[in-house]
Every structure is written in structure tokens, then in C-alpha cells.
Amino acid sequence: MKIVSLGLEKRDLSRLATAVAGMLVFSIGINIFVVPAELYNGGILGISQIIRTLLIRYAHLNLGSVDIAGLINLCLNIPLFILACHSISKTFFVRTLICVISQTIFMTVIPIPAIPLVEDTLTASLIGGIVAGAGIGIALQSGGSSGGMDILGIYYTKRRQDFSVGRLSLTVNLFIYLVCALLFDITVVIYCIIYTAVSTLIMDRTHSQNISTEVFIFTKEDPDQIMDYILKGLVRGATYWEAKGGYTEKTTNIIFTVISKHELSALKRKLRVLDPQAFVVSKEHVGIEGKFVKHL
Image 1 (tube, one colour):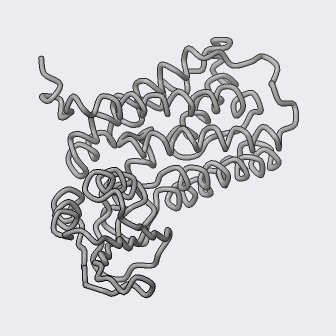
Image 2 (cartoon, rainbow, N blue to C red):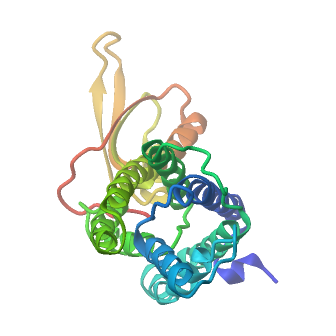
């Protein structure tokens, strides 16, 4: 059986493994820091955690250190799997399915400490936010996700240039925590919001596919090969013109393009082959008006 039949090329296995590793990091952040502090994640997982808590309190379903929130989360993600398959891409669907299943396994097998490793709730929310946010960012960077709001975030990001995955998560999470305020102590909700804000910030910083970057390439070589890679390899637009060096007064070529931070790494690797002497200037978080497709 070929991996290609599942929508994955063999060269994508390393990226998929990285995405699964991101899920492991995320699960560690949740089970080791967030759950022991009695905090709640946002999105579908947060809803799953609330259902888990209600089952423990009112149905007396207690499995000790085993957290069933992951299993509930897997069930609630089924409609979103269908959305990912039909509206985003089958490759993204396969990667997300594998990531969510691995997340469910990790959250089930990673034991929750009976005594919190970090007694201070504020510290636990900060550390948990950093670890969990980095895990989600790594998964998104590698082409997968933890499902839930990530799927909706990717769906809308592909359709709106000013949209970000973290922004949608933060909006939905605030609504969820308003519901939590009615069920739990308001202090817990405040710490949950702090955790969510930190994880959102770290996630958007890690998810470099969501960072628009302008790039100037100065090369004395024939620009056709570099232009060809940008146009066909990265599927991006580019403009180039001839200029004269102020110090050497020699003719040089300047190539300008706007790509994602993730694509910039690939471009730099290609430049080492095409022109090791090329001079590259880049700037992140540039404002863009007009058609700019986010390759997610």
C-alpha cells in the first residue's frame, strides 16, 4: 500500500512526524500544567473538558489519572473532519486526522499529576500557554492541526487575507469562558483567559505560514532561475529590475516578492544553490492590500 494513496508523499513523512511531535508537546502542556491547575482549554477541546468535568461531578465517572477529554474531543471533531476533507484539502484532512488521533492517545496515556507540579495558578497558566501554544504552532507549521478551531481557522484564513488562526481561537474562547463563568468560579475563568492569550500569541509566532514577509534579493547572476523558482516552485509573484551598485557601480539585479516566513526558509535554501553570493533583505509582518493567497 502506497502512502501516496492517502494523499501523502513519502517526503511528507518527516513533516507529519513533526506535526505528531507538536501534538505530544501540546498534550504535555495540557495534562501536566493546565488540567492539574483546573484550567480549561478553548475551542472544541475546552468544550470536551467541560463535558468531562460535568460527567465526573454529576455522573461520578472518575477514571483517576486517565483523562477522557481527548476521547470526547475526537468525537466532537468528526463534523469538522468532513469540512476539512471537502473544503480545505484531503492531504490536510489526513494529517489532521492523524494529529487528532495521536493527540487523543497522548492525552489518554500521559498521566495527570495528582499534585500540580506548579502550585501557583498564574505560573501554571503561563507555562501551559507557552508549551501548548508551541505544540499547536508546530503542528500547523508542519501542515497538520489539532482539529477543532484550527480547522475553522485554516478555512477562513484561506479566504480572508487579514485573518489569523489565533484570532478566531481567541474570539471563540472568550465566548466559551463566559459560559464557564456561569458554571465555575470566576477566578478560574480569568486564569483561563490568561492561558488562552499566551497560547494564542505563541501559536501565531510559531505558525510562520501566517507571517507575510517582503523579500528583496540582490544578485549579479542571471535572475531567470531565481524568478522561475519563485513563480513555479513557490507559486508566488515577483518583480525584478536592473540597478547599479552605489559603491562598485556594477550592474546588479533586484528581485522583489512577498511570501510567507515559512517559504522564506525554502527560498534561502534554493539561493544557496543558485547564487551563494546573493544578498537578501527581508521584513516580516508587512501589510498587504490586493490578492495574496496564503499557502496553508
